[in-house]
Length: 283
Image (cartoon, rainbow, N blue to C red; front, side, top):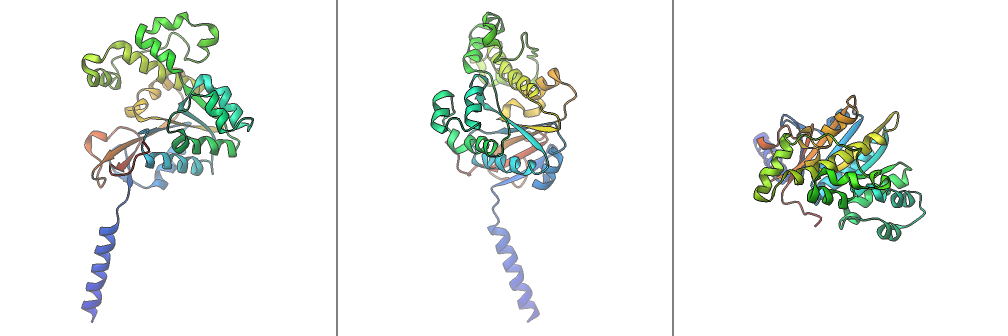
């Protein structure tokens, strides 16, 4: 009888394990599995947290909101995002103050196509909790200008236009590995000006974060993972503008098998959100 009972328990345990199919796992920079609670505790010590997403990844967007709500239990938060451009801050402020509704925001600001599903929950959280939400990305027309003509073209902007970008001249190091990766990925279509267009985005986001830091508050920023992966991009520019900041990073990757982090993703961030590649995307 004892043998039959033990056999039944083993079968149930095996069945339960086989049915356990997590959509994601969390890893630290060394590729070790970590709990959500431990990640939250570690990033909670930072002045700035950069949550690097894959723009169409549903799990990343869900976790961004969960991290926001959980960090807010012990921290005053200032939120910000690449997905809102600096010259749309006024429209964003009107929305946060309930002076305009979603339709008004959509009319006045350049919202991303996936705004309703992926970013509205974060901005609405800020609105409901009366916390700032900062538009950090350079207006795309200025990034395109750099891509076409180089940094020098920014000197021709009016003083009013220059308020929407990082102070000129911006620091720049094309030898940074992530910038070199852009050149490698683009092949014959890559150029130093393309990398500079990326850099002016990184610089502007970092500048806006530093501009909007509040005393005794944490800045939680949402951006495409490439902008902060391997502690470059925004992280590098934050160090140029205020080198005493404590910065924590999260990156998002997808794998067919999430039971172990693939070696190429180790060191990508302080914490890596590894999502099953079969998870439905938002677009």
